[in-house]
Image (cartoon, rainbow over all chains, first blue to last red):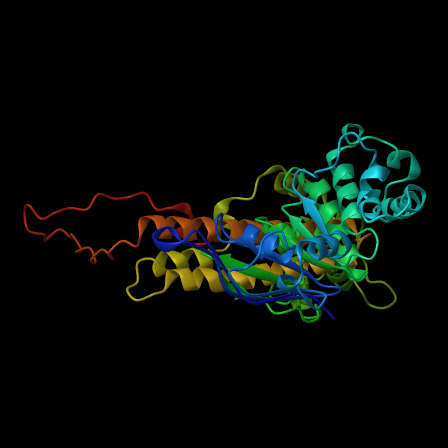
Length: 240
Length: 205
């Protein structure tokens, strides 16, 4: 099932002589259970794409659909609700609220959506457990957590409740290579469990965890690798 | 790859015959570099000739185990103690291809780079999938796999870098072929200064 769909999306910043084509004629689909990596040089449109996918920005032309809803048909309030209920974000700098514990951070989207604090906490603890954090760690504040643990909280928060689309913007940027890999593995597992993931990264090793890698240059998709086939014949000819 | 030293390293675990050595080598490297059994026996013969291993009596099944000698141990220690030289590695076909791509008229360098990057990333995805599938893989195999992952990553980074450099500087006009300046060259003919040969282009010795 397709969770995210971009149909002929264009995004132009500015107008006239100063117009910048941030994204040009872009088509993209991300299905449930799929992790798609977006790569490309700085200024190639990666962040624009992510912002459009999350409804933080609107296309100049073309359509963005999240779970079959065209975002442009929603009013402000409906869009905010869809963002709260269907889309999760993971950022490079975690973006946790410093005055809230890990569990309170993870529960935040549910509470904003009107769920009682008690019910939200139960779900938050379960979500944290899924990303490998125990009840003791759940009651710590962000400044008492390591970078890797903070990013785990952010992933738990991104996927709590019914949300099935996670948008990750360089989620491993601030982490060392082994911790970064743990975060990627976790994202991969959440996608294997049914989430749809869109990952912006400049790190080829992290893009390796994705099912597909899409390259952007100057706002255009220049290449997109087809989904992987089986790995049986993989090692033939790999040696040198 | 040094089959000779690999066999010595395996024999350091204890005496073994050809088939066992091949199996042990392939299991340590995750079947990445299949060893031909003929290659194993030829190498064992040479090692025996050079007194680095000694043949033991055949067992009941007619297999002849070999044992590493003290000279073999010294040879092995020397191998582990010395870094792998750039000249021991095969020539890098991709580097040569791109070096020629930027100097060959009519080649779309960006396209060459993009195709390679897609292929390398695909390989990286596949290695990563293998790695994810084997969470408790044997250490030696994991190390081989990660070496391939890091090498693929380095290649992608180098391709990104090359793409940016080419985009920024543009392509040079291919230089004309140098005239051969021999003993019969006319006086005053331009002589080309000898440039030291870059290591990467040297023959693999």
